[in-house]
Length: 123
Image 1 (cartoon, rainbow, N blue to C red):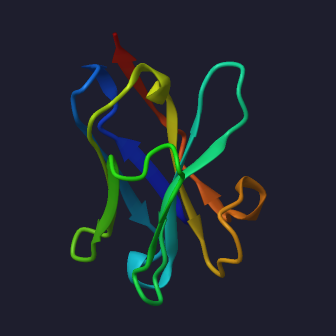
Image 2 (cartoon, rainbow, N blue to C red):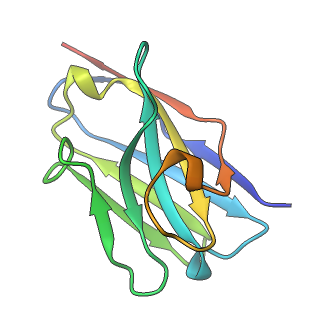
């Protein structure tokens, strides 16, 4: 059974940094496409960042380029999202997602989801 468990969310001031973790069980991150999505109140869930297992290429939403980085630790079977220069509009529930055969970073194409971790950025 595949499980994704996020952690690291919390309250941070604008301009600050936060690192989210996603621990994966039931699959190895070395052969799984891993990504982060987020959902703010009143908005659709949106893609934030992803890392492809085949070549470790990364993708980012325009809104976070230059501020967020994504990485993985094979030994810990864990994916990370490093968030810097945080803004109030980054406030959302952040979800870890995994996909076996990536076509697009779309909510409907992800095979597995975590339950989310809340990130709140204060002004």
